[in-house]
Image (cartoon, rainbow, N blue to C red; front, side, top):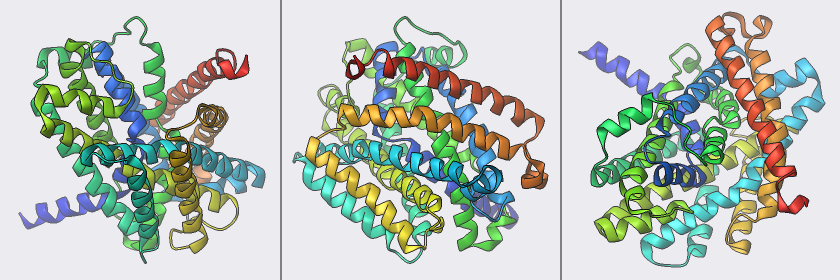
Length: 410
């Protein structure tokens, strides 16, 4: 019994980096997309969660092994293998994307707290960004980040499972949606948006940094178990629950969803204020975890690109993480939402940065001189290669939508 307890505790301790990645990927935009999927198409797109999570698990596992195999950061490996410009381009690209999308996370925090307490979102945007910046300057920021993200994941799970209890979904329809791939008419746009956001290459890349930070704070962790899959499975579970709730509650009544908070509003007249409050708590968890996680990605990668290192204990890195939060809060308060021009800018950077990052991770993971015994096995090579094809296909679709069908370019 003692041996089982010890193994279980070791496994729990190994979840940290994967849980952080799951929490930063599952933000307000993911909740909006998943709510729309369920509200419009019911259970028919549940299979897509399985596909996207599978590829995300492949790349997150690869990033975990890269972090374990090398003493230096991934960007340092990129500089060594392809030259300094390649590393700088990756770091700056990720920083620009993170800064551009940070406003959406700040808006999500403000709306969730504002609707819970029936106030303006602005004070909450200021308060929670200030609180997040304060967390940065704890002595062991990684330990604080890990505990905060695990708490927020648990908070989200409890709130969504409670909402699921009210929803009373159809189990046979859920099973059919999971095992029978369908592409309903008009669903291609949502399929692309969900796949691009759930199969997050930037989130997977960050896993290598989180693993190395964990090892810096606890050197014994290099020899222990480091499980990224559990966090990614939880990411998939949360996506599934939100889709199912929307399919069970909103679709039968034809209630449209244009933002994650719309689903909370729709719950209140159907099931009362408690159901709405629980969902808003989940939305808050998703938004606040992304405020911290997204900013950490942008600041860490820029610090590494500029030669300031990637160590969370570095004051320069913490200042850069805080800078992403300040930018997001300013845009959120100034415009009240993510401006269209900023979305276009972020998407245009993402189109070119994400395929580049995915290719770099794949090539590093396949390089035995870097990876040693942690080099990609044939299974990973094959399916990560398929994942790369998905990434490039999404980039081509986004190029078409952004530059040929966008009113800003006409």
